[in-house]
Image (tube, rainbow, N blue to C red; front, side):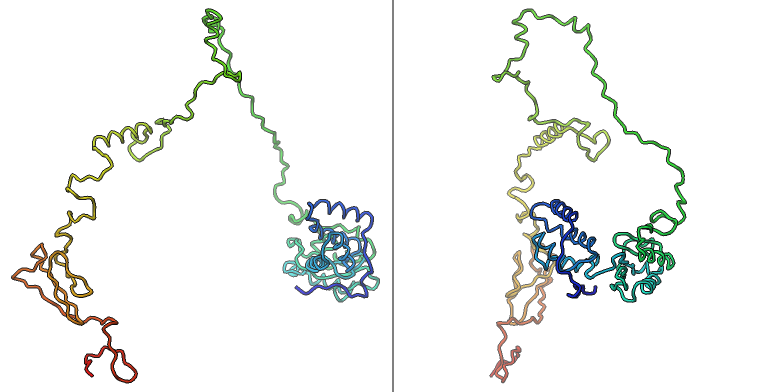
Length: 407
């Protein structure tokens, strides 16, 4: 967006003041906002001032800022940001804003601009010879379906052609702008289809009535025969005994309730469980009773069951492991740093720089090799650790692990 600046100093008025009616309106408008939020009225007051003078001057900005107790720069920011505010003098009879966005351009907005250049002035934001007319190109004016369109002050004129727009410009130039009908200039209702409605042509005949629900039925009266056959009180003392005693405050004592007692769930309202249809629901009390009976029959006391293996307490016990956890038939590694074979297998002594691997005979469950098949030893090279690396005496200190470490 192009930068917007105030008009030159030679056209700036010396002062600004609202008219009596506009001053009353501005005071009423400021009062609509809560205390401490009166600065929110800056846009309505600027627009009212523009309606009065046609544009926003430096004096107008300073006056509005003083009324709202705002810094001048804050009001200047608002006036220069919104393109609806005119920052230089415009035509006194009409300032025409021509929409130049894509829908209007596709529908002939360029022809409307040519009309403005021919009838008003070749340059935008410049008044005609007598200062009554001016024009500018603006962004979307919000009625794309009725393109092309223009706006004159607060009114829009839509569905224009070059000829119809020329007649509108001439009417405003002659001071007869009030004779032009705002809105669409063709035979349509607002943004409806051109030529009138084509659907929903029948007049609705249905009537809507407010629904009032009927009053609830009255409770039936007590049978007269039951009242007549009721036994009479033997004496005033008996009547007093039948009446519940009053509390200390004078109110009758209430019967005890079961609100705080555990509530049993009926079979109909019990939650559903997976199972056959007859067993799909069960009451809470019945379920608790069945669980208690099952625990009692199995002598479940919450302690681990040690009946199968005496002394076993869980997976940490070696009682359930064959040969105390040894794995017959699996190659194990022996030697320094590699661990020794468990379950009684003799580990081979580790040579410097090598690691031995013992193959266990599967014919014995205790892990010891049989006489027929002696354990074989496979020797392989292993990678030396950092502590075993000795640098050579050559210049540069080669850290490789030479086989010959003699000087």
